[in-house]
Amino acid sequence: MVQKLDKKITSIVSIAILVLAGACAYTVLGSDSEDRGSGSESGSYVLALNGVIASNDTVSDGIYSMKRNLVLVTNGEPTGNVKCFLDWITSSEGQAIVSEEFVSLKDSEMTIPSDPVGSQTITVGGSTSIMETMSVLAEAYMAKYSGITIAVNGGGSGAGASGAINGNFDIGMLSRDPKVGELEHGLVPTKIGVDGVAIIANAAGVTNLSTVDLAKIYSGEYTNWSQLGGDDRPIGVISREDGSGTRECFDNTLSAAVDGWSMKDDVVKFNNTAGVINLVSKTPGAIGYISVGKVGDI
Image (cartoon, rainbow, N blue to C red; front, side, top):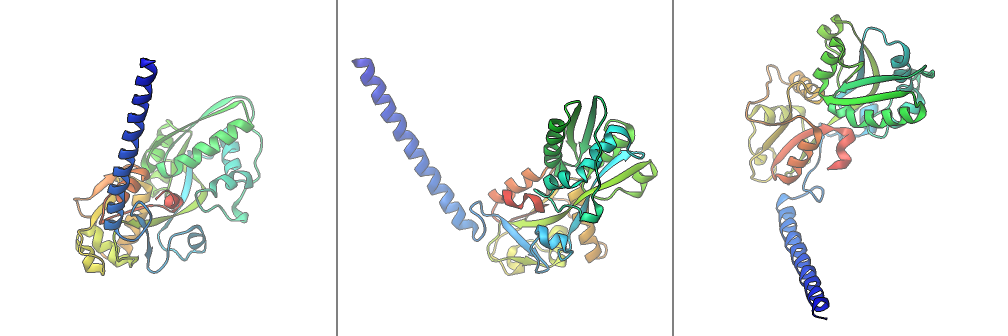
């Protein structure tokens, strides 16, 4: 009887603690959200760039200016089962998966796949922007063809190019077009889709930036949101790492808008999109940029 009573008391105390903890968390998050201002529940939201919000439609139509090609590369022309896999990705079946996160190819760019022969392990690596979609593609292809094993790795677009060149990867993932030097090493590109680079922020009072405004934020000329019509709050600048395809698209766009532009040194850098989203959502005044396919994650 005493044991049963002790268990009952323990359960009541545990429930009380959980309720109290939940109430405290609600209070803290609620006051934090009010401090952050407009946007999603996390405080972060998508900023328009030159009056245009990044979306599949605006990227596909060419209205949104900051965009990039998604490319898979091989060392030389793809052959055998590697070519079969690439052809399947660029077929209507593979593109249906690509379109769940990115902008798919036009009908005229799609291919007709053929079945692989025998058993083989295909190694794929590179862009972290493409990695999640590639994992889904790989799982679907392996389910379709039991003799094929596909190993997917990250590392960034630069690693994807170098890995394909040196033979570590059968297929390299690039969230950008190959560079001239990479092509000179024998890389052959296969375009699998298009992506836009969306600007996200956690700052009340600002909903749109021009490309020049954005360049001045990332160069350090603008340091407070009040300079852009927002609240009096310091701007926390967040970027992707050197070598990232997303970063390269971002840099190229700003360099084209402002002669001699360069990113300031004291920026926080992440080697993945999730890190950018997480820090922007938790940091009032922060700004960052992500793949348009990840906008739903903020």
